[in-house]
Length: 127
Image (cartoon, rainbow, N blue to C red):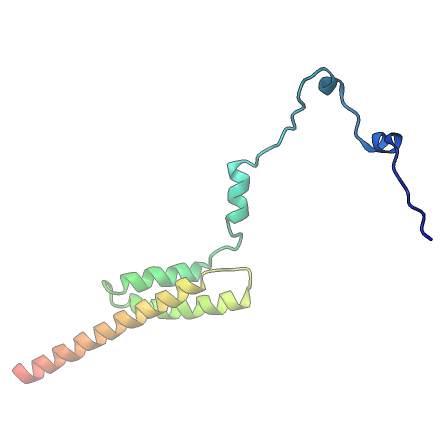
């Protein structure tokens, strides 16, 4: 048969934390909570991976490729180099920039080729 244990007033009083002098005098005890600074919050949310420079260059060349014809080829080449570097070094980001730069370079290259074909065709047809 299991013995039933009962707690006496002495046992329960022993487990209660004792009051501090401030609490005994009727004053409330406050706990100081340090809030993180804005810089600490920002650092938690900012990625520490550096963006690949070739990816940025591919994106810029892809945008400018519509204005300056030879930059569309540079955008495609820089995009390929950037994707290779990003896959080689896992600590870099910018895959999206590289892909978009390549696509913009390809689109501007196609527009230039279509314009060239149209101008040649117009010259041959209309003299």
